[in-house]
Length: 414
Ligand code: IMP
Ligand code: MG
Image 1 (tube, helix red, strand yellow):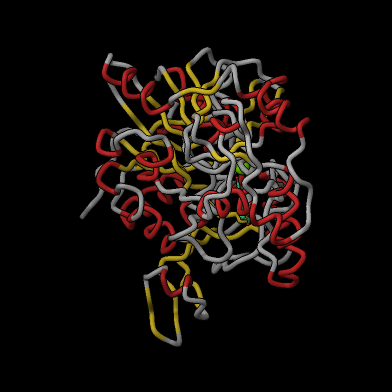
Image 2 (tube, rainbow, N blue to C red):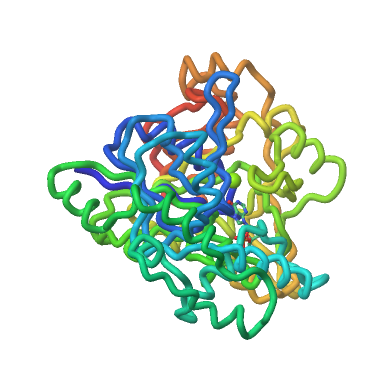
């Protein structure tokens, strides 16, 4: 009996998809609990690449898959994803639905924001969560159980976008009726019968609607404890949190990014790491590892239960001198509080330099284990571990399945 949560500790795209695919074998059920089709979780098997948006990234395994009520679901894109991945998935009756109106409103709001645009994925995520709070959003159960009414007072007020048509209701009913169910009840009985559950977070802590770099955030909570609400599963029963972070940082969309790299090096990293959005294809902004931000993200994600997994070490190799922010300088004073960056203050990263990681045969490192990894990489991870006082359990060294190394339990000084 085990329940674990995988969460992103940066601005999304940390490599959660690869990790969930790898971990899925050890669990009976895999559950999405936040976000929606804005997510792009990539799994690479051999030469084949799969991107999951609202389905859990374990869709390649024969596992029980769930979409909890904290997720907003677009029936149209779910139908498409299911046609490419014919899997068994249960969607909670209470999930909010994204209709053509929310997608229209998402794009219209971005236009109106002009130079302050957030850079959303355009999938209707923000308006769908807002409509729920306004109590005008249709839910899965509203289309599944007959008598559907278009509650969108917001649409009537705004007077733009398309209304809900009979065709849309019919399509949604066709997609959702066979898969709608009571996710909290199913998860609790599975757990009580000894089943194990893996919760798959979408986006990352710094995109959290409450704790992230507001307003440049997504519209759901992205932290581990949101499992309690977004899946209706008792947060107290979570055994471990697996926090995923890249050894550098990326962000797609606008907003503060203290360690952003501008210029040639960022292009080099973007090219080597394939740093283009899996959902929108946009070029991701690239920066150095920010340990101030990471410490903040860890503090919000059950730190006592958290283990760290770093990804994309192979991308940093062969790039020359390496840096990571260990503090900020704010108005000439040193700070180690990410809230200074949230408050829009001018934060200048204080960097520590590290020896370049040589490019090696990563396939053979994956086979031989952590001891075979370049010592510069091992030193870098040791430093991070000491700084954060959190155990690093695994380092990913390639996109394909199997390209990771587990670390032996590493002691850190406290
Ligand atoms: P939204 O979630 O589409 O409203 O977009 C809000 C912000 O979150 C934008 O900066 C998006 O680029 C970002 N975002 C949303 N989903 C993801 C994701 O899965 N990975 C990375 N960034 C994301
Ligand atoms: Mg992604």
